[in-house]
Amino acid sequence: MRRPNLLITGTPGVGKTTLGKELASRAGLSYINVGDLAKEGELYEGFDEEYECPILDEDRVIDELEDRMSEGGVIVDYHGCDFFPERWFHIVFVLRTDNSCLYDRLESRGYTGKKLQDNIQCEIFQTLYEEAVLSYKREIVHQLPSNTPEDLERNLDQIMQWIEQWMKDNN
Ligand code: DAT
Image (cartoon, rainbow, N blue to C red; front, top):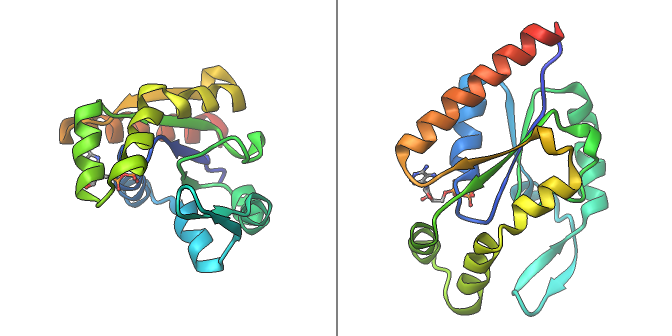
């Protein structure tokens, strides 16, 4: 049975992990958090002094994921999307959160100063949405509001419907 691969992207704090994990459990798909995968496998190629975080080794991430992606049925969660092979994904969701809401979430995650400001600016400039439409066919890229628990439920319902339809059309 063929199963689709989904990419969930957006600024840190928009709710990718919350949506991705719940969706995986409801749909019986597997969930991969690229940040966690990189940490576990130390898939890094240096350290960014300005942002005080390790730099992702994108080629090794791709090598690590290739076999699982070609099997299908994977939900990938990452705050970047331009380095994955375009052919991996059948649909791309960019979660969007209002500034004040995102500010509170990032602050309670312990973000302060430049790191907090940069992430808020990333959301204001819709950086991840732009990156997604430049990296994938526009018709497979969808923005979803992610401010409230109601938004989360609605997104889950809509994506579940999309998955069911995809399975019917492709099997
Ligand atoms: P990300 O994986 O994009 O960094 P997350 O899933 O860890 O984001 O969520 C960040 C915080 O926001 C976390 O405390 C859960 C909360 N959250 C996520 N989606 C939400 C929603 N739709 N409504 C309210 N809170 C949400």
